[in-house]
Image (cartoon, rainbow, N blue to C red):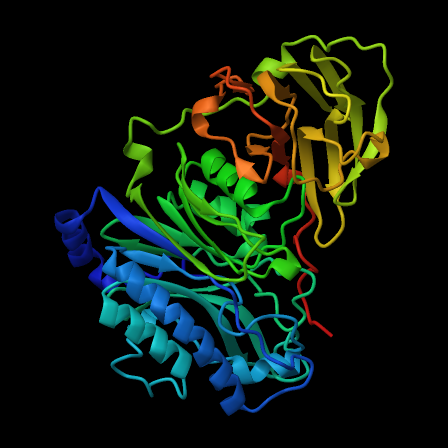
Length: 501
């Protein structure tokens, strides 16, 4: 599998061009798109009807691309499922698919539209990139024929892939990525046989690409960062916000911080399905984000990012997530722990009963330590410290170690872990740490109204503490150290390889 879609034959000359024209910073754009959905997804429509719908969505995306380009953007990312929607069968998605060739064929669809059959969507995206001199990242569907000699060939004789494409500022196809970790409802698509580590070079850094549920995986998400040393990730997603720990903006910003790369995350916008939350995240700070459950309109965001963040003096130092907690004695408590559920996982909780205190809660090998001070202990709000150390098994299987401080939905302890949107209790001081057995820990703080805590109010210490540093009282909804223990994962995050029925 190609590790990079950068043709070897032009590598030397391209490197010279990149070195001469390299940019220290670039303007990135993401567009959160309110997708125009088809009327019918269970029964197939004609190719003409499918194209009509896709063009309606591309009409909206075209306005965003043109506006971003006018404001100086070098690259724009659009969401997963942004051109035709979701909830299809294998048969009903087929009219929306195109043959997407390997980028090594050196193809600019806008200049040579008929080279790989009828590809009107790729042609239009290519022309948008070329005519506006901007890199365009989009998510569409790929189809590839197969035959009986392939034991994994589906009965209908074709593979169908959830696919990201990237067109450079000349309209050339420079990257194609087949989503490796499909989410459980994506029955319309096939799992690729092998993971693809797709990168592409630009004058403003080296980019990697993957899609939505891939961000939970080692392969390809961690590999493309750690082994291929990309500077930035482009990330189309269709993310269902699942409070308290899996809301798009807190999780994605935490991932960028922990992995040490820029993350350009474009989400779809559909409030009825709790889909919102896009952003531009740098390793050292959140550059901009959008979270809107009130309106039904899309949103364009732009921000300046460092092209090669690893070279910057502000680049975050490595964190030993085990150091502080493993050398700390557990805080004694006279109260008993209690169980609670977060997204089908049973946490061990302990209640925060005073306005200041020190607590420890443990589950299996993970012990979570919290020191805190509230401005006041309100009687109408309850907070708990929770720990989870185990295999998550619903809608994907992946091993987690999590320490979290969160507001319970009501004063009934049975609601600890349930979604909640607002908080009035304010924390002046806090320090959260855990005895993690992984270096992949994603730190997040979400405030009342699902807003991110500004970086000036907290820090990540090198010994593995998420702690306050300003003394400013913060209305905390949830604080978490979300750890992934990849070596304990089953072979595949999604449904597993093989045919989909």
